[in-house]
Length: 416
Ligand code: GAL
Image (cartoon, rainbow, N blue to C red; front, top):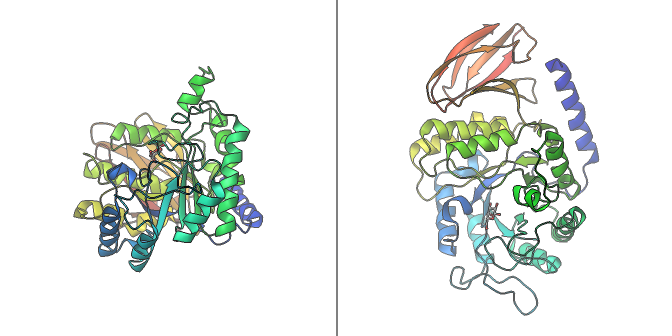
């Protein structure tokens, strides 16, 4: 299909998303949510002090000025038991004054607080879940002033592997309705990882399915997420700060572009930029790919001290502009030459973003050819985003050298 036809189809689908928008979605982020989450870096080691220090760091590095908004407390913030009325209780040692004062603290620094819960009896780390107490918990989150809820399906802990599709969806709808009754502006982040649609490895094994997962199965597995007003939904298992893991997650996004649009985003999991031993090139490639995918940009690194080379990546406005583009269209892989992959993302003003990924262990000379990428003009004006350089109008094709595990990302514009 010619790229112009694809763009036309995308425009039409975006218009229909807008026309169907319910009041759930009219006010919350149209573009992918941006923020930070405690899990990747801190796991269980969270506390009010950590969250305050993170908020201080986020403010000091002015992360709100480039769009980061939600600071999300993940699992392990809870006390081991529910309170006498079924309410969630914050761990009194980690959060001696509860959650509400933290909301105020982060708001004073220009951010919003987010929180984590589960539609099961237990969370993934074994703390109390929200099953049966959805209204109570939604009211607590809203009363505290939390503006983001990560709602994480954890069947294993609760002995619920193999739960019926309808029941999983019902549980997500119950919390969605409860949240909406409290405050329709709370971002509802679904983290269900394909259990209902039987594409999750554990659920698939449980159901005795041994065939490889197809793209249709993947699409079906997440199709219900917008129906229950999820703004984003996890499309993979957990990320880690390892190049191979990041690459396998990128592979899992194939074919999902049609689910992505304003207010609805595939979520390939939180960023690991700045964590583990990822190299500068790997951090750059990871961040670029998430921006190309219109993924939620949820940082996972330690914001108390951010090395300059990490800060340069996570605050790159021109990359963030691709992620936050109003068309909200996930890039598609248009050409695959083994370990050199080419992604194209159409943008709202008619430009395109092009990303070439070098997955090999050596630097590679690559040819970027408009025709091969499905772009139908002879010439485009090219801006190299990482080099922050205009490369001028390029006719037909050009070559670039890309280091191992690195990317070339360009914003291109039709020339008259
Ligand atoms: C996992 C989830 C992680 C993190 C963890 C907490 O299910 O995918 O992102 O939230 O639970 O226990």
